[in-house]
Image (cartoon, rainbow, N blue to C red; front, side):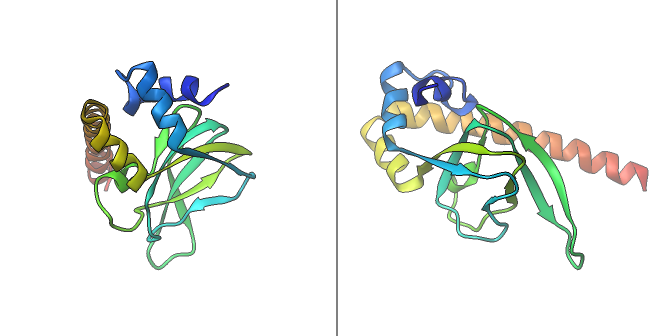
Length: 152
């Protein structure tokens, strides 16, 4: 499947034209990971956004004081991770590990920002979609927190 077809299915790229999707595909870099391989770790520097082209990844959080981790989400083809790199320059908030062999498209924050400046409509659409995605995740986290407190 070509990269523009993959990008067309991605939630944060919803509403973009074929030309805009092609511009995104041009600045993306394809990366391959093996099962069990780490894409990035919690607290590492983050300057890329990732789109899963093939495979599945697990988003994991470390448990302070314990060697274990907790999988908080599983993502598959057409889903993104690392989006907070578009919003701030802080370290990664989780670790991402490949559940199976993966092909992932990586987009550098600086190259994306250059594209946003040259096509402000593209930038506006992506950031609006990103805000909606982050709001949904925050609401889901709120519900999980409330459920956790109620069970204690």
